[in-house]
Image 1: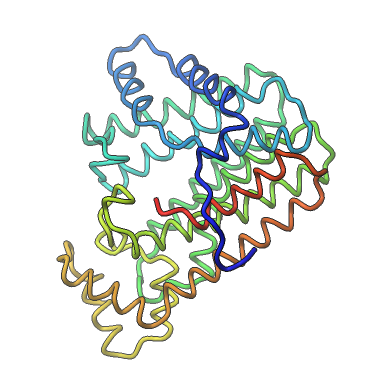
Image 2: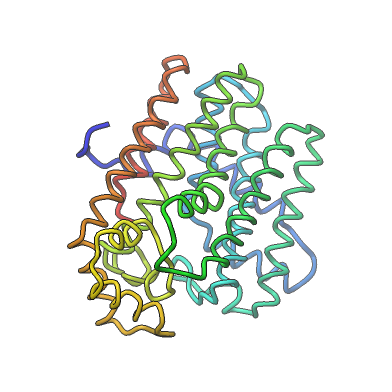
Length: 329
């Protein structure tokens, strides 16, 4: 994969499976339906703020690319989006976030207690749906993935010494929190295909997911709020250490590291301090390093697809790599 390629929009990637994605939205509504008023109200809010449907898209494309022809693919795609939604609800509660995709979070709209219970409800509905399919394979994959994501969240909470946080620890975190679910989506899409295809797609999803998350972390340093929908430097404001900062810290002198330490020790760092640290990270090569890592992972993801037969779906999966590393929001 070249260093500079034409960006690909998510809409282009989703075009081949647009009809199925419409059905996924209907399946989501069916699966989470509830009579209890506050849960029903929470569900309606979540359905309004549902995201880009990237994970269901990958599952459906993987299903096509390996000719698995799984009649359950639409339902399984809804399940993977439901698991993703549940993690977002829990993450927002843990982080005390008040906005997600420009809309109030569940914890802001109701309370942190309601958000925890809503996340649990979504997880349990996903499990009920997988059990209804009466097939251990997708249940086995998604059970493993949700456990990995939980451990990943705990890793983030336990990262106390911010300036000593290593790239190895960061890799473990993004593999668990982000890449595991993309990998699971691709693997479940390939159920019924040869084992070699299933494994290749699982590895593809893992590399793609890591590249996706590194790019997401880069955008926090490089793109304004009008583009990403969240304030620039939000990770720094929330004292989150991501790859650009990790790489920059390794090249910083004592004075610059002291400035980063000041930011991390300030409960609510001001915009000027955040902007200064962003400038430091760029000047010491942190952004360039993170960009290289994302592109290396993208190339590894691309190579995993070589084993699949040539097809339009395989081509679109390759386009999804470009989308993951070239997007601006």
